[in-house]
Amino acid sequence: MRRLARLARVARLMDTAVRIPGTNIRFGADFVLGLVPVVGDAGGALVGLVILNEARRLGLPARKQMEMLANIGTDAVFGSVPLAGDLFDLYFKSHRRNLQIILDHFDLTAEGVPRR
Image (cartoon, rainbow, N blue to C red; front, side, top):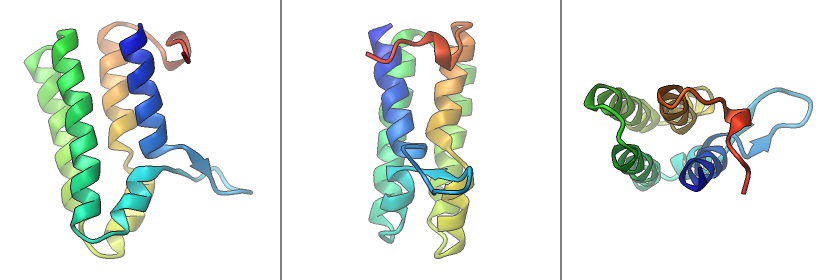
């Protein structure tokens, strides 16, 4: 459970840590990193690969790992497009999607993962 809690914290930090006041729009470090051309999106993808590696260590099947890799690739490719990619990063939250794949595999909900 500690591993899942750590992954949940990383996914939140990367995708939904900050809410824009008066809206339901949330963003995280992935969006901020994406503002730095090339290097930022590569950094976000690297964090995604760390989450993927942890999923592998937890025993997720190859099919689900490939789905997670597709999410990381989609985020990296579309996120690297100037300006449009930054808007894409606001809505396509690959780390949260990948966390959900892991939680679904273990038949858990985000609320069921301890915060500490």
